[in-house]
Image 1 (cartoon, rainbow, N blue to C red):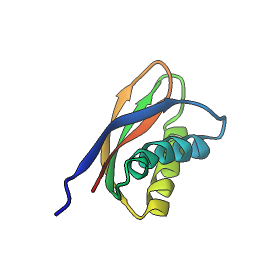
Image 2: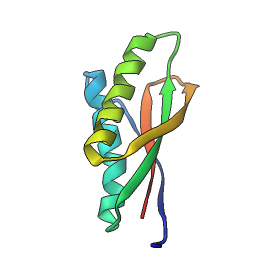
Image 3: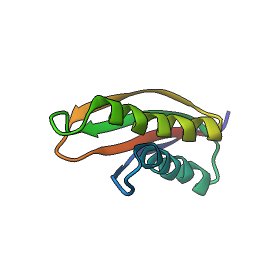
Length: 98
């Protein structure tokens, strides 16, 4: 069995106005770290920081869907995650690979 690779959570502040694309770009960035180390991604866990009094949960859902899409494209599961109240939106993944 190959040793497991684990990348600390990589999160981004909003870089585009489209919520789906924001999630997709942030997730792709995190997944690419495993590929950059010559590994194969296995699964991901999400982190979502959200200003709950400023932005609707529907927008957060779109961000998460973008992340889920990037995971599907890489052939891995988005196995769960954690959300926190934050002053600005952030999203990212901790990705495990081999």
